[in-house]
Image (cartoon, rainbow, N blue to C red; front, side):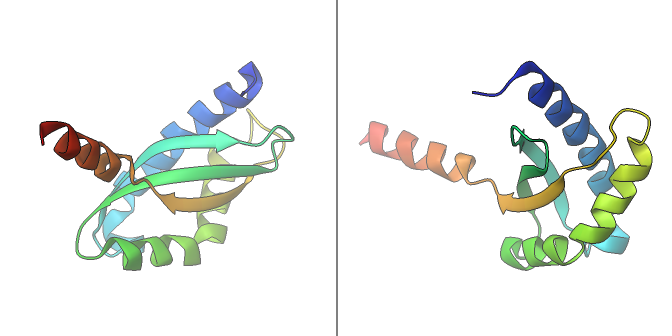
Length: 111
């Protein structure tokens, strides 16, 4: 269960990451359309699990591209939130497969 502070930090990071992915899609991420679906911050605020929904050529390649630029992403976010947070958590990026899961459940229910 997330605490109120973790939830607030997660929401701030989600908004800033979404803006970053929208603004830098062509230059940093090969033109893939990336949306941030959720951000979960650990209780000690040192790690943030970021779930991404990727639309484009190949989602696995786009995820690897995002993961290879984690350091740059963290640096950009740190500049944006420097007045709100002392330390920016390390990001771990994952593909959000909840839409695929939903479609599979829907398909099974229709049978």
